[in-house]
Image 1 (cartoon, helix red, strand yellow):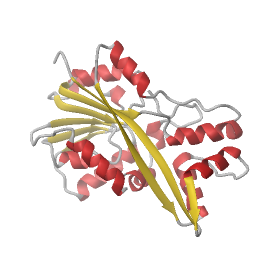
Image 2 (tube, helix red, strand yellow):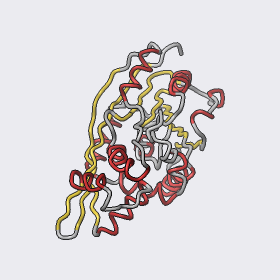
Image 3 (cartoon, one colour):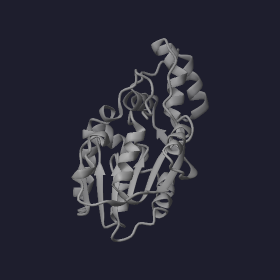
Image 4 (cartoon, helix red, strand yellow):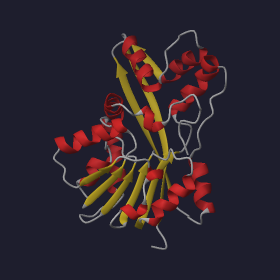
Length: 266
């Protein structure tokens, strides 16, 4: 279920392969106060205990991992990206956290027999870029003794909306969006899993001091060179970017679904 659906878009592990890109992600999505308030609420709703054993798949730089480790007994993370793993390791060391163990692998390459115990919580937050999502979920269930929680896109994420606007002019074809929560729900339903489903939405606001800084962001974050002659860029800017006194503010809507169910047959 890759969320970078078009073949012209780079795969998630490669996209976050450098520590610099991972640090940029942490700055943009891990330090926003409004998003952090919502994130804290979501973590509280996991009802972690001091002896909870947690497995997180695709933790990135640890925006959920670090606060969960402060509440749980042990957090094991599986992260395929070298850049994200590096930044997470740096944060673990700098904050002297002792109860996080890091496995740098794709979830598809993890063997359930490698774990000494089953987990009270298996969590994957916007990290379902897996070609066989059914097999991935079966593996999650096999090592979980309490609940599985997944977060995924409820609507077309804004980066895909941007791509859909500019792809025809830049690449001569339509952008193919990745599967969303409706597909995930259908997969779960066909597997005999009937999750509780909850909608949530964040608004991310980023401020850039110059057009150069804004251009650098799009080049670094999306591998896109801004071109004012491309009508898609013009439409995107008109809708999502405000300029005042040379300062540019970028508004990004982040709608998502939370899927939760009790693991069975364990």
